[in-house]
Image (cartoon, rainbow, N blue to C red; front, side):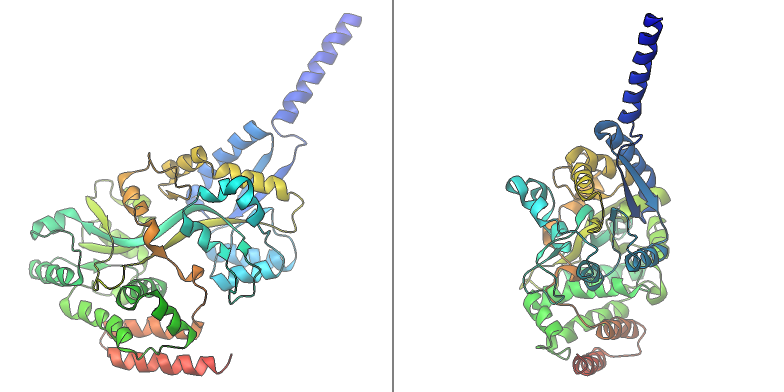
Length: 425
């Protein structure tokens, strides 16, 4: 009987040990996200983390992004946010969550042990998640998010179509205009992009504003010190008129959503595209044999650099009200280590936020990654333009493209709205 009892007790204890090892009764951290293309990869990482650390991680997907945004806003109002979540929106939306006490300040964790965690990221990826001293949102300076991947927006060129007209990828605006004439003569469509989604117009225009007048003057415009009637801003607006007149822009570009633009480029029906690094995964699915390359938008001025939009593509925040703050932080440290970041990049064709994870990524992603030090983004600027001004600016550029406004008319219109909105503050 004693022998039987000993065997039974041994089996019981081993069973309990195995139960604890796979997480039964152990802590669970919950993560909400909207990234449907990464669902399987996230679940695999959760499995690995539970095996390695004994902590269960549950990823809950809420897509599309509009539904996700509504869910986290409702959860914030009822204090039911999960341990980890992302915030989709502009910097002011991010600031609202921080100021309402829903985001844990990660600065101390990032800076611990000689800033080991912070230093593994691209600087621009951290900037998107950081509020600096004197920010206009009245947020305590600090880092409030963890970048999971990064992105930037550049131009793509079809190598076969360029070869057909005997041209190389353009490096200057004049070269782009010369190529545009050759494409038009051959009946080849020039540039496609989702400019029906006005934020992409804003991105393209910002690139050239930085190149023509420099960062300081752009930010002074937002502050109200430089008017939109300034000759440099008129030059920015004239670029869209020049693209229209040269025939570079695809028919219907002002109503084109980005998915349509991606299909046209992937099917060799346009020579150029203006798109983000996420397109590598999209084009792979649409046409694995697409022969294309990546380039920055051709510069128009040598006075200032061509600065492109980029930074953290997706970031996770830790819920300040969570009972599992340290466990959440530990997981985010683990998932942004080199091995996990390389796995995510391989599975999702996204750019890793960990800059040490680049050696094994596809060549197209490497070309995007090479420009990360030349990026900027409105979410890292010290000031933000008023929403009504942004809308008038972007829709006005659409009007230039279809011939309804001149660059000078748009400058006067946007400046009038700017002055009106500033009196309301």
